Length: 63
Image (tube, rainbow, N blue to C red):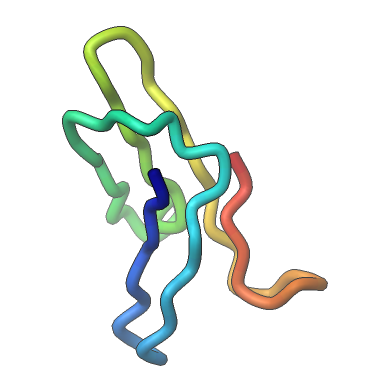
């Protein structure tokens, strides 16, 4: 299963790497210092990702 993140600022879609395939929810941090972080969760684990807008490959998610 693939998961994508939509960036409304530039209408870009970025694939979320190493997506666990099953997800019960997503929590996206919105404090100014941590708003680039989000967490996916299922019944057993949390998966935390960091979004970097400036990366050698362009916009990029790092698990």
